[in-house]
Length: 136
Image (cartoon, rainbow, N blue to C red; front, top):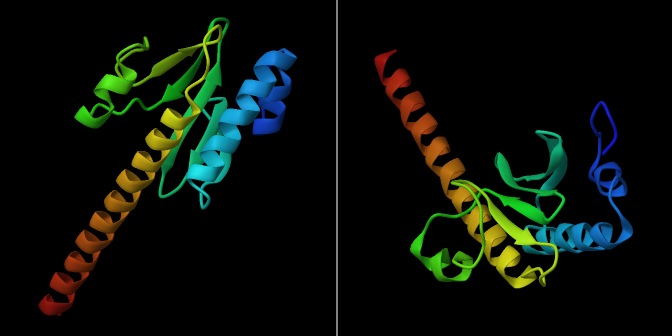
């Protein structure tokens, strides 16, 4: 990667060897298809998609591609069991096939989470406004 950071996902991807670039572009397209309303950005100096807040991030490393955040719910436990990662990340080894279908499922799950969180925040804000207007 270039010193001083990157300003776009295209610029980020260009900083890697052609083989990794292909994988990153396919991950990018997979996320775009799973979250068509999401906006591309660079956050924490890595590719990010935003939809009602940060939706999903991905990044390339020497031996793997990281995807963030890792869902910690039972429906993903079995699918993610074979992958390393920390508390909030899953690592897809570069020498194994990338599970694009799993990335699609994780992205759609994150879309649902963010939509629900935004709706909950809007309802709370509406309730607070109603309470304030009653006081007046």
